[in-house]
Amino acid sequence: MSFVKYPALAASLFVVLSGCTEFGTYYKEGVTKSELNIDRGQCNRAAADAYPPNIVTDWWPIYDRYGRVVSHRTEQYDINEGPRHTAVRSCMTEKGYERVQIPYCKDEQLGENHYAKIEVAPELTPSICGLRTEDGGRVLIDLSKPISSKSSG
Image (cartoon, rainbow, N blue to C red; front, side):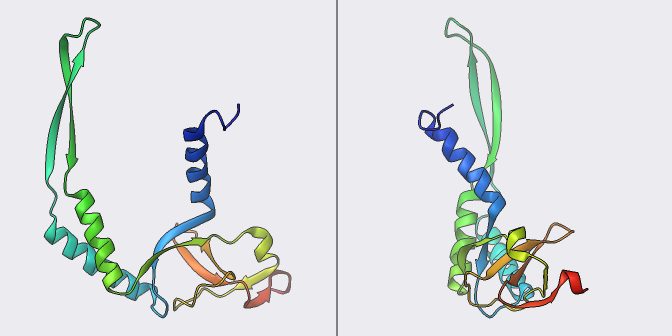
């Protein structure tokens, strides 16, 4: 199969695969994860207050082969979801955050070394990457600052 013939498939695969190699987050140099969570919570609350859920129901006809309506299906969705998301993004920007993509660390980058998790967001450099934790979270490490070798511990 040639991906040139299927550009939508190629684009979809790229999005899926890139999700495995990096993650998007709000980022502001010098803040802790707790400070980020507090700021995000405040922005989420303000956005929810400004754009509360507003669930609407759409009715979609189902036609038979002669073009007659034979049934229908309904869809429910929150028409304020988009504006709420935009409000959170604007609020975080006002607080000095930017949306960034941080790569996950690769096994070959880690080698035999151990690294301390970064507690305060540093300047983003090519040596900063993310590790998945056992509970499904993420931590940042600096590959230029190993604390020990795995073989020595």
